[in-house]
Image (cartoon, rainbow, N blue to C red; front, side, top):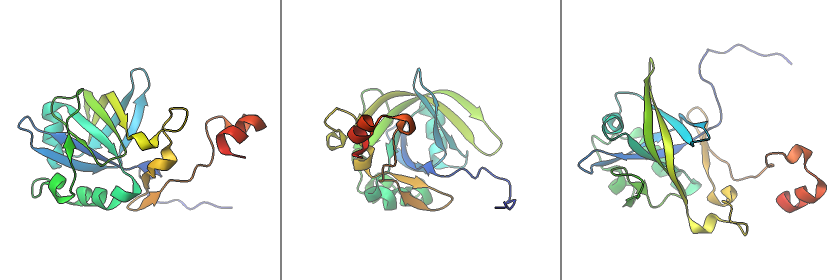
Amino acid sequence: MSFTHINTGALLAPTPVVMVSCSDRENNYNIITIAWVGVVNSKPPMLSISVTPERYSYAMLMDTKEFVVNFVSEELVKAADFCGVKSGRDIDKFEACNFTPINIEELKYAPAIEETPIFMACSVREIIELPSHTMFLAEVMGVYAKDYLFDENGRVDFVKARLVSYQHGEYFATAEKLGFFGYSIASKKVLKRRMGK
């Protein structure tokens, strides 16, 4: 099988798609949809988001240095798309999407979206200016999940969350579990317990 060279770019797929909620110091909230998000450290837990300086949320992030990563479920994908194509300069996205902002004890300004299945409260630790985007490296201060997502062992069942991924302009469902870390070497007993096989 042969390969064809395509235009060089950051053609990574799939990526998560999340709604990042933020605020200024006067409690003017905004939501920006981001696919450029990723885990960068485990102890302490840290992640990054990348935003262009032209985006309305950029000044809020630079000022308060906090944000919330709200996971996107299949039910929220249309609202997530809306929050990615509309500017907070022109519209209140919480109101337009019928979202409820909720305060989080770990953060002073940024609200979470009550309708999301899972959210992470983040505090910016470092800002890196890159040629096209600015990367915000943040420590995860708290993680919250809706009660219905927990299995009998107290773990979050991500299949129940029905999360969405993003692949170069298109959204995809991710609700099918294919395996778990270490399943390629797991015993039959463990496979049966974890996968039902």
